[in-house]
Length: 362
Image (cartoon, rainbow, N blue to C red; front, top):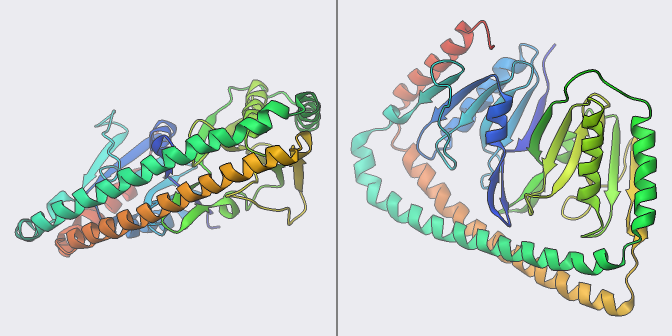
């Protein structure tokens, strides 16, 4: 029987800069292959081949996508074996901590033709500098959007019926956990719910939850306690010995958008814009916290102004990412044209030999 494939983003453009969960994945993994190369589209196909290699052998895998080029895979994680294959030099750089034991480096740098690189070097440098300028503008605009979003929360925080909120939370905890107690140390993992991309906000909710039996859709306002509720939900689960997965927000990387409890096949998540979903199958339920805060007419006018400013900043950030996307695409395509394909294939074959010859991943 084939394994399953789950699609995720490995990085996000947030109000605090570029966020990635690859450091957490490296810590989660028992074996890591650090794949090194200049900026390229070619590694995506390699990560896909690696994924299929394990899926056909019955292992569940996760593919992690680039938030800039949303069809490009930049990491493959084999869940059962806890083996990670990671693009480790662009756009984020990682170095092996346990080189020679459970950390391995596979370099494709020698597959590039030096003469072609020298011919195109000046053009590549110019494009990289321009690309980085637009990325910086996009991230600064995301910071502005995050600050406006913080402002958006204030009218709701000040008037929430927190007693009602706490009473409802207690019922949720009681019905979910009842008398559960596991005699083991809980394991916490980290993922991302979604991110802003050059095409707008994107997430992989459908892939993430395709096998989950109970999905709890939280409906609420900014500042309405959703993230705090989910963190408490996760901490309660961990206190009982349950494993948890924390899904971090693509705008505010200190906030979470979901908590998944694999042993209970339960996920609770922030089902509000830009990742708003509705129940569609048995086991889905709405958890409403909107009812604990109603705005008066004057407050609503204030919020409407904040929302308009927030959406304007998100629109500008998306436009800046589109320019960054175009420059980055040109850089990768130019560098890919400098590859000696025979040498590249030779390095790929060496990697698969290492995979096939490895009998233990501990």
